[in-house]
Amino acid sequence: MHKNVRIGDILIEQGYITEEQLMHALSIQKASNYAKKLGEIFIEEGLISEKELALVLAQQLDMEFLDLYSVEINLNLLKNYPLQILKNANAIPFKEDEDFIHIAIADPLNYDALELLERTIVAKPIKFYIALKNDIHHIYERLEIIETARSLMEQVKREISSEDFKLDNEQSAIMQLIEQILKSSIINNASDIHIEPSAGDVSVRNRVDGVLREIFILDIEVYNALVSRLKILGNLDISEKRRSQDGRFSMQINGRDYDFRLSTAPTLHGESIVMRILDQQKILLTLDTLGMSEKNLQKFQDLLHAPYGILFVTGPTGSGKTTTLYAALNEIKNIENKIITIEDPVEYQLPLVQQIQTNEKIGFTFSEVLRSVLRQDPDIIMVGETRDEETLSTAVGASLTGHLVFSTLHTNDAPSAITRMVQMGLQSYLIADSLVGVVTQRLVRKICPYCKKEHKPQVSLLEKFKTYLPSDALFYAGEGCAKCGFTGYLGRVMICEILQIDANLSNQISLGKNRYEIYEAALQSGYEPMVVDGVHKALEGVTSLEEVARVVKL
Image (cartoon, rainbow, N blue to C red; front, side, top):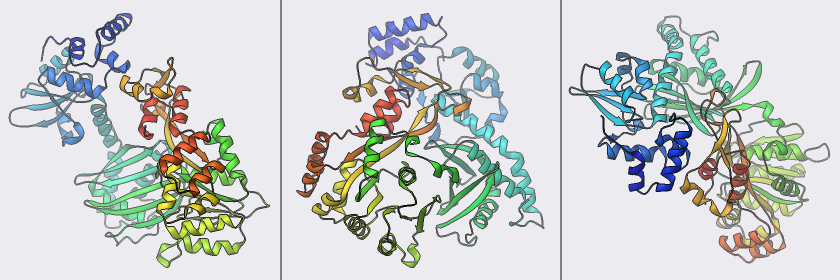
Protein backbone atom coordinates (compact mmCIF):
# COMPACT_ATOMS: atom_id res chain seq x y z
CA MET A 1 0.00 0.00 0.00
CA HIS A 2 2.80 2.43 0.83
CA LYS A 3 3.54 4.87 -1.98
CA ASN A 4 5.02 8.33 -1.82
CA VAL A 5 1.96 10.21 -3.06
CA ARG A 6 2.10 14.02 -3.16
CA ILE A 7 -1.58 14.72 -3.64
CA GLY A 8 -1.06 18.46 -4.25
CA ASP A 9 1.39 17.87 -7.10
CA ILE A 10 -0.94 15.32 -8.70
CA LEU A 11 -3.91 17.72 -8.61
CA ILE A 12 -1.79 20.54 -10.11
CA GLU A 13 -0.61 18.17 -12.83
CA GLN A 14 -4.20 17.16 -13.66
CA GLY A 15 -5.44 20.79 -13.69
CA TYR A 16 -7.72 20.66 -10.63
CA ILE A 17 -5.76 23.28 -8.64
CA THR A 18 -3.07 25.91 -9.13
CA GLU A 19 0.25 26.35 -7.31
CA GLU A 20 -1.24 29.30 -5.38
CA GLN A 21 -4.24 27.21 -4.28
CA LEU A 22 -1.88 24.47 -3.07
CA MET A 23 0.11 26.97 -1.00
CA HIS A 24 -3.15 28.35 0.46
CA ALA A 25 -4.28 24.82 1.39
CA LEU A 26 -0.87 24.10 3.01
CA SER A 27 -1.22 27.26 5.12
CA ILE A 28 -4.70 26.12 6.27
CA GLN A 29 -3.25 22.70 7.13
CA LYS A 30 -0.44 24.32 9.13
CA ALA A 31 -2.95 26.56 10.98
CA SER A 32 -4.90 23.43 11.99
CA ASN A 33 -1.67 22.00 13.43
CA TYR A 34 -1.85 19.36 10.66
CA ALA A 35 -5.11 17.95 12.04
CA LYS A 36 -6.63 18.27 8.56
CA LYS A 37 -5.52 16.28 5.54
CA LEU A 38 -4.80 18.12 2.31
CA GLY A 39 -7.51 16.19 0.47
CA GLU A 40 -10.13 17.32 3.02
CA ILE A 41 -9.00 20.94 2.64
CA PHE A 42 -9.23 20.82 -1.16
CA ILE A 43 -12.81 19.49 -0.84
CA GLU A 44 -13.74 22.14 1.79
CA GLU A 45 -12.34 24.91 -0.39
CA GLY A 46 -14.52 23.74 -3.29
CA LEU A 47 -11.56 22.91 -5.53
CA ILE A 48 -12.46 19.27 -6.08
CA SER A 49 -15.32 16.92 -5.17
CA GLU A 50 -14.93 13.83 -3.00
CA LYS A 51 -15.55 11.54 -5.98
CA GLU A 52 -13.07 13.39 -8.20
CA LEU A 53 -10.40 13.07 -5.49
CA ALA A 54 -11.15 9.35 -5.09
CA LEU A 55 -10.81 8.79 -8.85
CA VAL A 56 -7.48 10.67 -8.96
CA LEU A 57 -6.12 8.60 -6.05
CA ALA A 58 -7.35 5.35 -7.61
CA GLN A 59 -5.51 6.19 -10.82
CA GLN A 60 -2.32 7.25 -9.01
CA LEU A 61 -2.23 4.21 -6.71
CA ASP A 62 -3.25 1.81 -9.45
CA MET A 63 -6.38 0.82 -7.52
CA GLU A 64 -9.94 0.27 -8.67
CA PHE A 65 -12.64 2.82 -7.78
CA LEU A 66 -15.75 1.02 -6.54
CA ASP A 67 -19.35 2.25 -6.52
CA LEU A 68 -20.68 0.37 -3.49
CA TYR A 69 -24.25 0.70 -4.80
CA SER A 70 -23.32 -1.29 -7.91
CA VAL A 71 -22.10 -4.43 -6.12
CA GLU A 72 -23.81 -7.00 -3.93
CA ILE A 73 -22.41 -6.69 -0.41
CA ASN A 74 -22.16 -9.73 1.82
CA LEU A 75 -23.06 -8.19 5.19
CA ASN A 76 -22.34 -11.51 6.95
CA LEU A 77 -18.64 -10.94 6.28
CA LEU A 78 -18.61 -8.14 8.83
CA LYS A 79 -19.30 -10.59 11.63
CA ASN A 80 -15.88 -12.20 11.02
CA TYR A 81 -13.81 -9.07 11.70
CA PRO A 82 -13.48 -6.52 14.56
CA LEU A 83 -16.06 -3.87 13.74
CA GLN A 84 -14.22 -0.98 15.44
CA ILE A 85 -11.03 -1.59 13.47
CA LEU A 86 -13.04 -1.59 10.24
CA LYS A 87 -14.78 1.65 11.21
CA ASN A 88 -11.50 3.34 12.19
CA ALA A 89 -10.13 2.51 8.75
CA ASN A 90 -13.38 3.57 6.99
CA ALA A 91 -13.34 0.11 5.44
CA ILE A 92 -16.02 -2.36 4.44
CA PRO A 93 -15.37 -6.01 3.42
CA PHE A 94 -17.87 -6.72 0.65
CA LYS A 95 -16.73 -10.02 -0.90
CA GLU A 96 -14.53 -13.05 -0.25
CA ASP A 97 -13.34 -15.53 -2.88
CA GLU A 98 -10.67 -18.24 -3.06
CA ASP A 99 -7.81 -15.76 -3.42
CA PHE A 100 -8.73 -12.52 -1.65
CA ILE A 101 -10.85 -10.71 0.88
CA HIS A 102 -12.11 -7.68 -1.08
CA ILE A 103 -12.33 -4.52 1.03
CA ALA A 104 -13.50 -1.01 0.05
CA ILE A 105 -11.74 1.87 1.82
CA ALA A 106 -12.37 5.62 1.86
CA ASP A 107 -8.80 6.83 2.50
CA PRO A 108 -5.97 4.82 0.92
CA LEU A 109 -3.40 7.18 2.47
CA ASN A 110 -4.43 6.32 6.05
CA TYR A 111 -1.54 3.86 6.27
CA ASP A 112 -1.63 3.25 10.06
CA ALA A 113 -5.29 2.18 10.07
CA LEU A 114 -4.82 0.01 6.96
CA GLU A 115 -1.71 -1.71 8.36
CA LEU A 116 -3.64 -2.57 11.54
CA LEU A 117 -6.39 -3.97 9.31
CA GLU A 118 -3.89 -6.13 7.42
CA ARG A 119 -2.41 -7.46 10.69
CA THR A 120 -5.90 -8.27 12.01
CA ILE A 121 -7.19 -10.01 8.85
CA VAL A 122 -4.64 -12.75 8.20
CA ALA A 123 -6.83 -15.53 6.75
CA LYS A 124 -6.24 -14.37 3.16
CA PRO A 125 -4.53 -11.53 1.31
CA ILE A 126 -6.58 -8.32 1.06
CA LYS A 127 -7.45 -6.60 -2.19
CA PHE A 128 -8.27 -2.95 -1.56
CA TYR A 129 -10.66 -0.73 -3.56
CA ILE A 130 -11.36 2.98 -3.18
CA ALA A 131 -14.96 3.97 -2.35
CA LEU A 132 -16.73 7.10 -1.10
CA LYS A 133 -16.79 7.67 2.67
CA ASN A 134 -20.55 8.42 2.69
CA ASP A 135 -21.28 5.11 0.93
CA ILE A 136 -19.27 3.19 3.54
CA HIS A 137 -21.05 5.02 6.38
CA HIS A 138 -24.40 4.12 4.82
CA ILE A 139 -23.52 0.40 4.94
CA TYR A 140 -22.84 0.67 8.67
CA GLU A 141 -26.12 2.54 9.15
CA ARG A 142 -27.91 -0.34 7.40
CA LEU A 143 -26.32 -2.78 9.86
CA GLU A 144 -27.54 -0.78 12.85
CA ILE A 145 -31.04 -0.57 11.32
CA ILE A 146 -31.13 -4.35 10.81
CA GLU A 147 -30.15 -4.95 14.45
CA THR A 148 -32.84 -2.52 15.69
CA ALA A 149 -35.63 -4.34 13.84
CA ARG A 150 -34.37 -7.87 14.49
CA SER A 151 -36.14 -8.60 17.83
CA LEU A 152 -39.51 -7.32 16.60
CA MET A 153 -39.18 -9.35 13.40
CA GLU A 154 -38.43 -12.53 15.35
CA GLN A 155 -41.62 -11.96 17.33
CA VAL A 156 -43.58 -11.47 14.08
CA LYS A 157 -42.13 -14.68 12.61
CA ARG A 158 -43.12 -16.72 15.69
CA GLU A 159 -46.61 -15.26 15.55
CA ILE A 160 -47.03 -16.00 11.81
CA SER A 161 -46.01 -19.63 12.30
CA SER A 162 -48.44 -20.15 15.19
CA GLU A 163 -51.80 -21.86 14.56
CA ASP A 164 -53.96 -19.08 16.04
CA PHE A 165 -52.43 -16.24 13.93
CA LYS A 166 -55.08 -13.68 12.87
CA LEU A 167 -54.35 -10.68 10.64
CA ASP A 168 -57.09 -8.53 12.18
CA ASN A 169 -55.73 -8.86 15.74
CA GLU A 170 -55.11 -5.27 16.90
CA GLN A 171 -52.55 -6.44 19.52
CA SER A 172 -50.53 -8.62 17.14
CA ALA A 173 -46.79 -8.28 16.64
CA ILE A 174 -47.34 -7.34 12.98
CA MET A 175 -49.54 -4.46 14.13
CA GLN A 176 -46.82 -3.40 16.60
CA LEU A 177 -44.31 -3.47 13.72
CA ILE A 178 -46.58 -1.23 11.62
CA GLU A 179 -47.02 1.19 14.53
CA GLN A 180 -43.24 1.24 15.03
CA ILE A 181 -42.69 2.09 11.34
CA LEU A 182 -45.32 4.87 11.50
CA LYS A 183 -43.95 6.30 14.76
CA SER A 184 -40.34 6.31 13.51
CA SER A 185 -41.43 8.03 10.29
CA ILE A 186 -43.37 10.75 12.11
CA ILE A 187 -40.49 11.36 14.54
CA ASN A 188 -38.22 11.77 11.48
CA ASN A 189 -40.67 14.36 10.03
CA ALA A 190 -41.19 12.18 6.97
CA SER A 191 -43.75 13.04 4.30
CA ASP A 192 -43.90 9.52 2.79
CA ILE A 193 -43.11 5.92 3.78
CA HIS A 194 -41.86 3.49 1.10
CA ILE A 195 -41.98 -0.29 1.69
CA GLU A 196 -40.08 -1.98 -1.13
CA PRO A 197 -39.45 -5.73 -1.46
CA SER A 198 -36.34 -7.11 -3.17
CA ALA A 199 -35.14 -10.68 -3.74
CA GLY A 200 -33.63 -11.03 -0.26
CA ASP A 201 -35.20 -8.45 2.08
CA VAL A 202 -37.63 -5.55 2.42
CA SER A 203 -36.44 -1.96 2.60
CA VAL A 204 -38.48 0.62 4.54
CA ARG A 205 -37.56 4.18 3.60
CA ASN A 206 -38.74 7.64 4.62
CA ARG A 207 -38.88 10.69 2.41
CA VAL A 208 -37.53 13.45 4.64
CA ASP A 209 -37.11 16.94 3.18
CA GLY A 210 -37.60 15.47 -0.27
CA VAL A 211 -34.82 12.85 0.07
CA LEU A 212 -35.29 9.14 0.85
CA ARG A 213 -33.58 7.62 3.90
CA GLU A 214 -33.64 3.98 4.92
CA ILE A 215 -35.01 3.36 8.43
CA PHE A 216 -35.69 -0.41 8.54
CA ILE A 217 -34.59 -3.54 6.71
CA LEU A 218 -37.06 -6.38 7.24
CA ASP A 219 -36.74 -10.08 6.51
CA ILE A 220 -38.69 -11.25 3.50
CA GLU A 221 -40.63 -13.74 5.70
CA VAL A 222 -42.62 -10.93 7.38
CA TYR A 223 -43.41 -9.14 4.11
CA ASN A 224 -46.69 -10.88 3.13
CA ALA A 225 -48.22 -10.45 6.59
CA LEU A 226 -47.12 -6.79 6.67
CA VAL A 227 -48.68 -5.99 3.27
CA SER A 228 -51.90 -7.87 4.06
CA ARG A 229 -52.32 -6.04 7.39
CA LEU A 230 -51.75 -2.66 5.73
CA LYS A 231 -54.32 -3.52 3.05
CA ILE A 232 -56.88 -4.38 5.74
CA LEU A 233 -56.19 -0.99 7.38
CA GLY A 234 -56.72 0.76 4.04
CA ASN A 235 -59.86 -1.22 3.11
CA LEU A 236 -58.14 -2.78 0.08
CA ASP A 237 -58.59 -6.23 -1.46
CA ILE A 238 -55.87 -8.42 0.11
CA SER A 239 -56.28 -11.07 -2.59
CA GLU A 240 -55.59 -8.62 -5.46
CA LYS A 241 -51.84 -8.49 -6.10
CA ARG A 242 -51.69 -7.90 -9.85
CA ARG A 243 -53.16 -4.39 -9.98
CA SER A 244 -52.50 -1.08 -8.23
CA GLN A 245 -54.86 -0.10 -5.41
CA ASP A 246 -55.42 3.09 -3.41
CA GLY A 247 -56.78 3.41 0.10
CA ARG A 248 -56.68 5.46 3.25
CA PHE A 249 -56.68 4.95 7.03
CA SER A 250 -56.37 7.01 10.20
CA MET A 251 -54.38 6.32 13.33
CA GLN A 252 -53.45 8.14 16.51
CA ILE A 253 -49.68 8.38 16.93
CA ASN A 254 -48.12 9.98 20.02
CA GLY A 255 -51.49 11.51 20.96
CA ARG A 256 -52.15 13.14 17.56
CA ASP A 257 -54.45 12.10 14.73
CA TYR A 258 -52.84 11.31 11.39
CA ASP A 259 -54.28 10.19 8.06
CA PHE A 260 -52.28 7.85 5.85
CA ARG A 261 -52.91 7.67 2.10
CA LEU A 262 -52.01 4.19 0.90
CA SER A 263 -50.93 3.17 -2.60
CA THR A 264 -49.88 -0.30 -3.80
CA ALA A 265 -48.17 -1.24 -7.08
CA PRO A 266 -47.10 -4.71 -8.31
CA THR A 267 -43.33 -5.03 -8.84
CA LEU A 268 -40.99 -7.87 -9.76
CA HIS A 269 -40.54 -9.08 -6.17
CA GLY A 270 -43.99 -8.22 -4.77
CA GLU A 271 -46.15 -5.19 -4.10
CA SER A 272 -44.49 -1.84 -3.42
CA ILE A 273 -46.33 0.16 -0.75
CA VAL A 274 -46.18 3.95 -0.43
CA MET A 275 -47.93 5.79 2.39
CA ARG A 276 -48.34 9.57 2.38
CA ILE A 277 -48.46 10.99 5.93
CA LEU A 278 -51.17 13.63 6.28
CA ASP A 279 -50.97 15.71 9.45
CA GLN A 280 -54.30 17.52 9.88
CA GLN A 281 -52.56 20.40 11.71
CA LYS A 282 -50.85 21.36 8.43
CA ILE A 283 -54.09 22.86 7.14
CA LEU A 284 -53.44 25.79 9.49
CA LEU A 285 -50.63 26.96 7.18
CA THR A 286 -50.72 30.64 6.28
CA LEU A 287 -49.02 32.42 3.38
CA ASP A 288 -46.32 33.97 5.56
CA THR A 289 -45.20 30.50 6.74
CA LEU A 290 -44.52 29.26 3.19
CA GLY A 291 -41.13 30.96 3.03
CA MET A 292 -41.82 33.40 0.18
CA SER A 293 -39.63 36.48 0.01
CA GLU A 294 -41.36 39.74 0.93
CA LYS A 295 -41.47 40.84 -2.72
CA ASN A 296 -42.93 37.55 -3.96
CA LEU A 297 -45.43 37.41 -1.09
CA GLN A 298 -46.78 40.85 -2.04
CA LYS A 299 -47.11 39.76 -5.70
CA PHE A 300 -48.92 36.57 -4.68
CA GLN A 301 -51.36 38.40 -2.41
CA ASP A 302 -52.16 40.81 -5.26
CA LEU A 303 -53.00 37.82 -7.48
CA LEU A 304 -55.20 36.23 -4.79
CA HIS A 305 -57.35 39.33 -4.52
CA ALA A 306 -58.06 39.60 -8.25
CA PRO A 307 -61.85 39.88 -8.80
CA TYR A 308 -61.84 37.11 -11.42
CA GLY A 309 -59.45 35.18 -13.69
CA ILE A 310 -57.36 32.04 -13.46
CA LEU A 311 -54.18 31.60 -11.39
CA PHE A 312 -51.87 28.63 -11.96
CA VAL A 313 -49.39 27.16 -9.48
CA THR A 314 -46.89 25.06 -11.40
CA GLY A 315 -44.00 22.73 -10.64
CA PRO A 316 -43.16 19.01 -10.58
CA THR A 317 -44.81 16.44 -8.31
CA GLY A 318 -43.76 16.98 -4.69
CA SER A 319 -42.91 20.67 -5.06
CA GLY A 320 -45.58 21.82 -2.59
CA LYS A 321 -48.20 23.13 -5.05
CA THR A 322 -51.17 21.79 -3.06
CA THR A 323 -49.76 23.23 0.18
CA THR A 324 -49.48 26.65 -1.47
CA LEU A 325 -53.07 26.48 -2.73
CA TYR A 326 -54.37 25.43 0.71
CA ALA A 327 -52.48 28.34 2.30
CA ALA A 328 -54.00 30.65 -0.34
CA LEU A 329 -57.52 29.39 0.45
CA ASN A 330 -56.86 29.90 4.18
CA GLU A 331 -55.90 33.48 3.36
CA ILE A 332 -59.06 34.39 1.41
CA LYS A 333 -61.81 32.17 2.88
CA ASN A 334 -64.53 33.88 4.88
CA ILE A 335 -68.24 33.64 5.57
CA GLU A 336 -69.07 36.02 2.70
CA ASN A 337 -67.75 33.95 -0.22
CA LYS A 338 -68.32 30.40 -1.35
CA ILE A 339 -65.23 28.33 -2.12
CA ILE A 340 -65.43 24.92 -3.78
CA THR A 341 -62.44 22.66 -4.42
CA ILE A 342 -62.18 19.71 -6.82
CA GLU A 343 -59.42 17.33 -5.73
CA ASP A 344 -58.00 13.88 -6.40
CA PRO A 345 -57.81 12.96 -3.59
CA VAL A 346 -58.92 15.35 -0.84
CA GLU A 347 -55.86 15.41 1.43
CA TYR A 348 -56.87 17.90 4.13
CA GLN A 349 -60.27 19.10 5.28
CA LEU A 350 -60.63 22.88 5.26
CA PRO A 351 -63.23 24.81 7.27
CA LEU A 352 -65.62 27.07 5.29
CA VAL A 353 -64.65 25.23 2.07
CA GLN A 354 -66.78 22.73 0.14
CA GLN A 355 -64.46 19.96 -1.04
CA ILE A 356 -65.33 17.46 -3.77
CA GLN A 357 -63.32 14.34 -4.62
CA THR A 358 -63.24 13.09 -8.20
CA ASN A 359 -63.85 9.46 -9.10
CA GLU A 360 -62.51 8.42 -12.50
CA LYS A 361 -64.05 4.92 -12.26
CA ILE A 362 -67.59 6.28 -12.46
CA GLY A 363 -66.79 9.11 -14.88
CA PHE A 364 -66.78 11.78 -12.16
CA THR A 365 -63.74 13.52 -13.70
CA PHE A 366 -62.33 17.02 -13.12
CA SER A 367 -64.14 18.44 -16.17
CA GLU A 368 -67.43 16.70 -15.22
CA VAL A 369 -67.28 17.95 -11.61
CA LEU A 370 -66.27 21.45 -12.70
CA ARG A 371 -69.37 21.78 -14.92
CA SER A 372 -71.64 20.77 -12.04
CA VAL A 373 -69.77 23.06 -9.60
CA LEU A 374 -70.58 26.10 -11.73
CA ARG A 375 -74.26 25.48 -10.92
CA GLN A 376 -73.44 25.67 -7.17
CA ASP A 377 -73.00 29.48 -7.30
CA PRO A 378 -69.32 29.56 -6.23
CA ASP A 379 -67.16 32.69 -5.90
CA ILE A 380 -63.81 30.88 -5.88
CA ILE A 381 -63.00 27.47 -7.40
CA MET A 382 -59.88 25.39 -6.88
CA VAL A 383 -59.23 22.66 -9.47
CA GLY A 384 -56.64 20.26 -8.06
CA GLU A 385 -55.01 19.62 -11.43
CA THR A 386 -55.65 20.72 -15.00
CA ARG A 387 -54.96 17.52 -16.92
CA ASP A 388 -56.70 17.95 -20.27
CA GLU A 389 -58.13 20.48 -22.73
CA GLU A 390 -61.71 19.94 -21.57
CA THR A 391 -60.91 20.80 -17.94
CA LEU A 392 -58.78 23.77 -19.05
CA SER A 393 -61.53 25.17 -21.32
CA THR A 394 -64.16 24.82 -18.60
CA ALA A 395 -61.88 26.45 -15.99
CA VAL A 396 -61.03 29.35 -18.31
CA GLY A 397 -64.73 29.73 -19.16
CA ALA A 398 -65.51 29.94 -15.44
CA SER A 399 -62.82 32.59 -14.92
CA LEU A 400 -64.26 34.70 -17.76
CA THR A 401 -67.73 34.65 -16.19
CA GLY A 402 -66.69 36.29 -12.93
CA HIS A 403 -65.11 33.46 -10.96
CA LEU A 404 -61.62 33.34 -9.46
CA VAL A 405 -60.12 29.95 -10.36
CA PHE A 406 -56.98 28.36 -8.89
CA SER A 407 -55.36 25.30 -10.43
CA THR A 408 -52.05 23.49 -10.97
CA LEU A 409 -50.06 22.59 -14.06
CA HIS A 410 -46.86 20.62 -14.61
CA THR A 411 -44.39 23.08 -16.17
CA ASN A 412 -40.77 23.92 -15.41
CA ASP A 413 -41.12 27.71 -15.27
CA ALA A 414 -43.85 30.36 -15.29
CA PRO A 415 -43.66 31.48 -18.97
CA SER A 416 -43.90 27.81 -20.04
CA ALA A 417 -47.40 27.65 -18.51
CA ILE A 418 -48.66 29.88 -21.34
CA THR A 419 -47.21 27.70 -24.11
CA ARG A 420 -48.50 24.62 -22.26
CA MET A 421 -52.04 26.03 -22.36
CA VAL A 422 -51.67 26.60 -26.12
CA GLN A 423 -50.40 23.01 -26.57
CA MET A 424 -53.49 21.77 -24.70
CA GLY A 425 -55.66 23.42 -27.37
CA LEU A 426 -56.68 26.78 -25.87
CA GLN A 427 -56.86 29.86 -28.09
CA SER A 428 -54.26 32.56 -27.35
CA TYR A 429 -56.87 35.33 -26.96
CA LEU A 430 -58.70 33.27 -24.27
CA ILE A 431 -55.44 32.83 -22.34
CA ALA A 432 -54.73 36.58 -22.59
CA ASP A 433 -58.22 37.46 -21.30
CA SER A 434 -58.38 34.94 -18.43
CA LEU A 435 -54.86 34.43 -17.01
CA VAL A 436 -53.98 36.70 -14.06
CA GLY A 437 -50.71 35.06 -13.04
CA VAL A 438 -48.50 32.00 -12.69
CA VAL A 439 -46.53 30.89 -9.63
CA THR A 440 -43.79 28.31 -10.25
CA GLN A 441 -42.12 26.77 -7.24
CA ARG A 442 -39.66 24.21 -5.92
CA LEU A 443 -38.75 23.07 -2.43
CA VAL A 444 -35.13 23.29 -1.27
CA ARG A 445 -33.73 21.87 1.94
CA LYS A 446 -32.88 24.35 4.69
CA ILE A 447 -29.44 24.31 6.29
CA CYS A 448 -29.56 22.81 9.78
CA PRO A 449 -29.24 25.72 12.25
CA TYR A 450 -27.54 23.48 14.85
CA CYS A 451 -24.49 22.63 12.73
CA LYS A 452 -24.41 25.54 10.27
CA LYS A 453 -20.99 26.90 9.34
CA GLU A 454 -19.37 28.98 6.62
CA HIS A 455 -18.75 26.95 3.47
CA LYS A 456 -17.03 27.36 0.12
CA PRO A 457 -18.93 25.80 -2.81
CA GLN A 458 -17.00 24.19 -5.64
CA VAL A 459 -15.39 26.66 -8.02
CA SER A 460 -17.24 25.10 -10.98
CA LEU A 461 -20.56 25.71 -9.19
CA LEU A 462 -19.71 29.35 -8.46
CA GLU A 463 -18.87 29.78 -12.14
CA LYS A 464 -22.39 28.65 -13.11
CA PHE A 465 -24.01 31.22 -10.80
CA LYS A 466 -21.54 34.09 -11.35
CA THR A 467 -24.17 36.27 -13.10
CA TYR A 468 -26.26 36.33 -9.91
CA LEU A 469 -23.51 36.54 -7.26
CA PRO A 470 -21.77 39.53 -5.68
CA SER A 471 -17.97 39.37 -5.55
CA ASP A 472 -17.92 39.12 -1.72
CA ALA A 473 -20.59 36.39 -1.44
CA LEU A 474 -20.51 34.18 1.66
CA PHE A 475 -22.17 30.77 1.76
CA TYR A 476 -23.07 28.29 4.47
CA ALA A 477 -23.60 24.56 4.88
CA GLY A 478 -24.48 22.12 7.66
CA GLU A 479 -21.68 19.88 8.95
CA GLY A 480 -24.18 17.20 10.00
CA CYS A 481 -25.33 16.51 13.56
CA ALA A 482 -27.81 14.34 15.49
CA LYS A 483 -30.56 16.97 15.09
CA CYS A 484 -30.53 16.70 11.27
CA GLY A 485 -29.69 13.01 11.01
CA PHE A 486 -26.14 13.98 9.94
CA THR A 487 -27.41 15.32 6.61
CA GLY A 488 -26.66 19.01 7.25
CA TYR A 489 -30.26 19.91 6.37
CA LEU A 490 -33.38 20.33 8.50
CA GLY A 491 -36.74 21.18 6.94
CA ARG A 492 -37.58 22.67 3.54
CA VAL A 493 -38.45 26.08 2.20
CA MET A 494 -40.04 27.26 -1.03
CA ILE A 495 -38.21 29.10 -3.77
CA CYS A 496 -40.45 30.51 -6.47
CA GLU A 497 -40.99 32.85 -9.39
CA ILE A 498 -44.18 34.82 -9.98
CA LEU A 499 -45.39 35.99 -13.36
CA GLN A 500 -48.03 38.73 -13.17
CA ILE A 501 -49.95 39.29 -16.39
CA ASP A 502 -50.04 43.00 -17.21
CA ALA A 503 -51.34 44.76 -20.36
CA ASN A 504 -48.04 44.33 -22.23
CA LEU A 505 -47.82 40.59 -21.50
CA SER A 506 -51.49 40.08 -22.27
CA ASN A 507 -50.93 41.68 -25.67
CA GLN A 508 -47.91 39.41 -26.37
CA ILE A 509 -49.93 36.32 -25.44
CA SER A 510 -52.90 37.30 -27.62
CA LEU A 511 -50.51 37.76 -30.58
CA GLY A 512 -49.41 34.13 -30.15
CA LYS A 513 -45.77 34.90 -29.31
CA ASN A 514 -43.44 31.99 -28.51
CA ARG A 515 -42.03 31.14 -25.09
CA TYR A 516 -38.78 33.09 -25.60
CA GLU A 517 -40.61 36.27 -26.65
CA ILE A 518 -43.00 35.96 -23.68
CA TYR A 519 -39.99 35.42 -21.37
CA GLU A 520 -38.32 38.63 -22.65
CA ALA A 521 -41.57 40.58 -22.27
CA ALA A 522 -41.99 39.19 -18.74
CA LEU A 523 -38.50 40.41 -17.75
CA GLN A 524 -39.47 43.90 -18.89
CA SER A 525 -42.59 43.65 -16.67
CA GLY A 526 -40.56 42.90 -13.52
CA TYR A 527 -40.53 39.09 -13.65
CA GLU A 528 -37.54 37.47 -11.92
CA PRO A 529 -36.64 33.82 -12.67
CA MET A 530 -36.61 31.33 -9.80
CA VAL A 531 -32.80 31.20 -9.65
CA VAL A 532 -32.83 34.78 -8.29
CA ASP A 533 -34.98 33.75 -5.31
CA GLY A 534 -32.81 30.65 -4.78
CA VAL A 535 -29.56 32.63 -4.78
CA HIS A 536 -31.03 35.19 -2.35
CA LYS A 537 -31.92 32.39 0.07
CA ALA A 538 -28.42 30.90 -0.31
CA LEU A 539 -26.82 34.31 0.37
CA GLU A 540 -29.08 34.71 3.43
CA GLY A 541 -27.83 31.33 4.72
CA VAL A 542 -31.28 29.72 4.54
CA THR A 543 -30.19 27.08 2.03
CA SER A 544 -27.00 26.10 0.21
CA LEU A 545 -25.96 26.94 -3.32
CA GLU A 546 -25.72 23.19 -3.98
CA GLU A 547 -29.43 22.81 -3.13
CA VAL A 548 -30.38 25.64 -5.48
CA ALA A 549 -28.35 23.99 -8.27
CA ARG A 550 -30.12 20.69 -7.55
CA VAL A 551 -33.60 22.02 -8.27
CA VAL A 552 -33.13 25.00 -10.62
CA LYS A 553 -32.05 24.80 -14.26
CA LEU A 554 -29.49 27.46 -15.19
